Length: 177
Image (cartoon, rainbow, N blue to C red; front, side, top):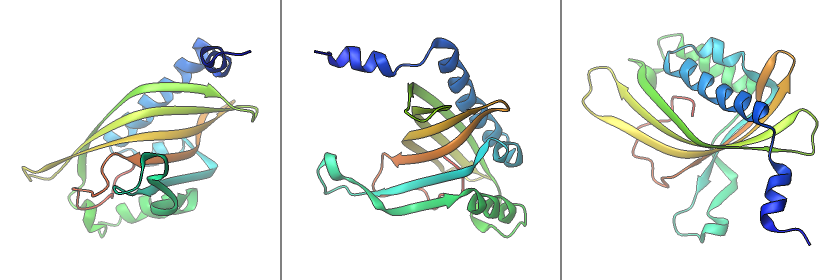
């Protein structure tokens, strides 16, 4: 009989893959914090699905995340449109642009049954401040990613962002999590 610890160990990746994925997550955070969305876009897989499902505060934990309703549900084409819009100066939720700092931690990387694809689970704390406004946002969340390991480097295949808050205090989600 297999123990829970043995089952978890069987899904663990080798140290080199873990380091590659952890560095990928740190690199994409730095690109976004530096306002380098075009460079970040290059890290996205063509089959990207980026979702932020709704979380219900009154539901039991086992069913509180509603994966049939989303705050955001973007493909790579939608992300392209969002980035292009930000560059027009008419994306008023980002005029002036947000100043951000992403703190990524609690990274866990697991194998999948799909060749060349790993799962990465991480925590993200996003600090966001706009212009000279003294107000700032702290947006905590968990991220459930699938990352394709390619010859050109890791590519973000799917990202599901589970916001800690059920009622957002931020005025908008005009930044990528």
